[in-house]
Image 1 (tube, helix red, strand yellow):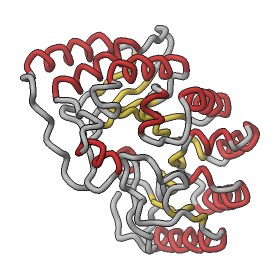
Image 2 (spheres, helix red, strand yellow):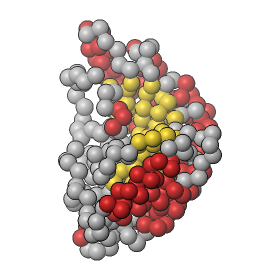
Image 3 (cartoon, helix red, strand yellow):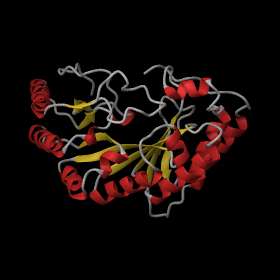
Image 4 (cartoon, one colour):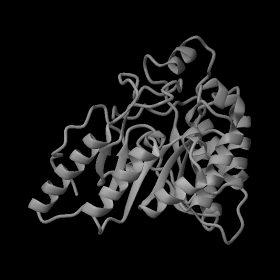
Length: 303
């Protein structure tokens, strides 16, 4: 359901593809880290946590709008970049009001970082889950410490692992994102091996790939211009995807909903892992064979 938003959001505003029809509620402005070398999403914003009273006013405006149209949202997504970093005395009353105003809501989603997760106790996370905050999107990007350091992600692979396991223990569903090509040619092999390892140790409910492009004016773009990072070709990106999926060790009873259908990706892929792993890998092998050497993927349209 798309509608004219009755609340003025502070742009730019981003949400995951799966939250396309969700009501967007800003809890924080910008990103608390905002140092990732590849990302330009929130560089125009100064990070801040919004006042609880302002958030509750926005919720009341939404409720009035929906009631007038005899509608009710099925999903709400909490913005901005890592809204889970907001303190409990903001998240708790916000979620309680969401549940009061929209009792038929299916779920609430949020962006999270490893730091956000580790700074909260398991009891706090369990409390949030009971208040329908049951979907968190975690940018793993890579399981390689070399890559995470290069892109200034702000955490180590061990912290990513600990945060992922903590979320699973707390009852929140995890949607984990990895970035193809983020380590360039230099770190490609380590990126593949270590990313598959982390995913196998803490399998998320959902997993997706994005493709890395040097966004103009970012530090990552400048590193590419200076020859410090060599971007991967279309064939090499497909080889990375195949390598990660081949290296991902799962038991038959485990289940990951897999998607590689973001606008940045060359070809759409979807399935259930490990059930469809062999089929997906065979498809990738065909694409790799058909993709010529030295060709780079076209840049995705501006979002």
